[in-house]
Amino acid sequence: MITAISLENFAAFKKLDLKFSSGINIIIGENSCGKTQLLKSIYALSHEQEVTSKLLGLFKPNNKKLTGLYHRGGEGKTEVRIEDSSGQLSKIEFGSRTETVKHEPAFSGLSNPVLVPTKEVLSLLEAIQTEAVPQETLSILFDDSIVDLCRTLLAEPSESLAETVNKDPRLGRIIPILVNAIGGKFEINGSEHVFVKGLFVEKGNSEISKSKGADMYADFTQLEFRKTAKSETSVTMIAEGYRKIGLLQRLIHVGALAKGKANVLLWDEPESNINPVLMRLVVECLLELARNGQQVIIATHDYVLLKWFDLLMDESKGDHVLYHALFRDEDGEISKETVDNYKMLSENSISRTYSSLYDAEIKRSLGVK
Image 1 (cartoon, rainbow, N blue to C red):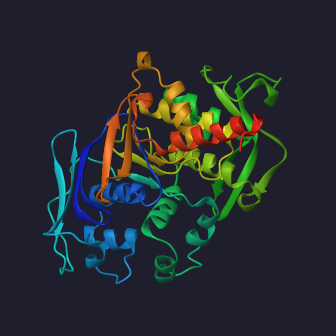
Image 2: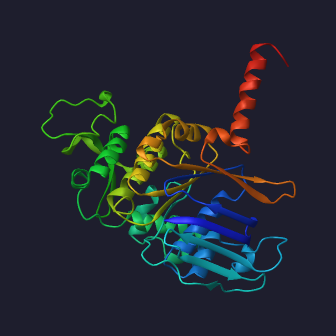
């Protein structure tokens, strides 16, 4: 897992150092504070692909050269490094005029990270799987985070979803909650990409009602997926928010998460396109993944998501959440504040905005202009 990152003269950052929790890390801040750039930096330096091409594929600078990633107004060389829990370093250096990166060897024993961008990707899988769109065109249309994630999702699972659920008690808690919350599962059968309506139920239980709640099956040891009539629907006909829930289900199913892998889940704006009603579900599942050894780093500017983490984290279950607030200092450079208690954040533009909204509502109710 990643324990720290240091960036100097890179992209939006003149100088930034962060230390990460082995559990949940939440990066917050206004737009243009570098949240996505931070996630992509971690991804590039912990990925097995050659780092220069990965940086260019992720960030897509205007001049298609590394010089486009040099911090504007910076002095000296660019340096980015990340450290893992065993003390290994992955480090890059380049100058304001160089076109290749000096890269010290990446980590050994660390699986490729998973980066989930803001864009919904399940609807893109069929085009990528059938190679209907040439690789060169894909590279023009999308950055590497989208293409890489699609290829991860297209990996062939080693077993059925029900087998995964019943074999591993950890996943047996998470997957049924996800599936039952949206009333079905996403499947890839050859070239067919479908949403299959149904629910996970206890084997032998013939009486089932969705109204019983999505999480009531979490404690059952043996579950089966039960389809409903006229069950299959095209993925593109399903709401985008449901597709993001399905994405998490698929990542677990193909073994990209929570199967003893020493990797990190990087998720940019999990709240994007998700109904606030489902936000608690997402937070519960991320906490459950972290309890089973999955490091999670997310970027957000959503108050509801933040508050659910604040309300649902449970230290007695080993939960550890770090909040990293990015903000611009008096010189206009990006700085940070890190706390393990949401209420202790002083640089919290999200909370201030909601407080201002509440104040405006009170003033209106009192007739104050």
